[in-house]
Amino acid sequence: MIPKTLVISDLHLTNKFNRKKYDYLVKLISKFDRLIINGDLWCVLTITFDDFINSDWHRLFPLLKSKKTIYIPGNHDPAKFTDKRVYLFCDRLVNEYDLKDPPFTFHIEHGPRLLKRIYPEDEKTINFLKLI
Image (cartoon, rainbow, N blue to C red):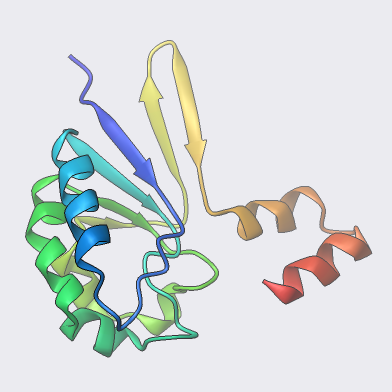
C-alpha cells in the first residue's frame, strides 16, 4: 500500500510562534504517513536558521521526524543557510524529489529553481525571479 503523502510549501515560519498555526499543522500533518516540505519552511529574511531551530517551532520537529520528512529547500530557506541540524526535522534534504504513485510520478521542486530551468533566456522571468 502506498503511504498517504502530504506536500506542503511556503509556510514562512518566523520567530513569532503562532499557536493557532501550530495546532493546525499538527492536526493536518498527523493525518498523513509521510511529509514532503517543498521549500520556504522558514524565511531567512525574518529569522536565522539558528533562531528557527531554537524557536518554539521546534515543537513540530518530533512530528516531522515521525513522518520521515523529505525537505526541499526553497528560495527563502536555501540549504546554504542551514547545517546538519536540518536533520532535527527531516530525514532527507534534497533539491528535488520524484514521488512515485504508479502509474504516476510527480516531480516536486521549489518554483523559482524550476522556473530558472524552464525559462533560462526569458529576461522578464529572470527579472521577476530576482524579486523573489
